[in-house]
Image (cartoon, rainbow, N blue to C red; front, side, top):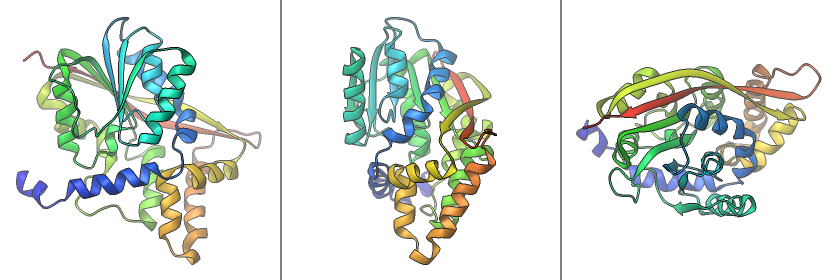
Length: 275
């Protein structure tokens, strides 16, 4: 495993990836997945006063849900603009959350700092998956909980990012993010430090005016889509548009001309080993 890792420049990949997620304004997309974070927090059920960390928190969805329970919440993300969004949202709700700029692969917290560690469609995109998983385990106290919402290789997530990858291939050697959305992948990543991993498929819904409305939003605000359209040849942009739009059509559950997209994902709750 170590020999494999030394062949990959994770630092450079992380830097490039940060640029991708900073493109556009992910907050405009993430607020449509608020119900995913609400369901994730409900699944792990943190109590008032517990210490909660939201890893790769974006503009703060899961952190805000936990803060409403009077938890002591910290959120971390490597995109400064998203952390600023998160701080504004926390101020608007009059909740106290310690939002910080930082990398999920190098969490700036002592061992066992948190009772609950959350990540809603976040940590799965860390290029060094083993290192990111190790950090989740390290900062979670023995007997604490780790809760994740992850796209799966099948269903919307796999199809959506697969449409992008056909036009803009991912960095060579890096494992696919949807590995976090498989029981095998989670066992490989977290099994050595947990005494239990519970997974279930869960569906939430996002609402838009139409498929073209979605495409307008993603082309303007969703970093991977923004940069995909910049990288492909102008002659291929229509094909990229059509491939992504086809995914949204496939998962559209509306029959009234609007768009209601079914976001099926894997919801995971793991118990940190006592030792």
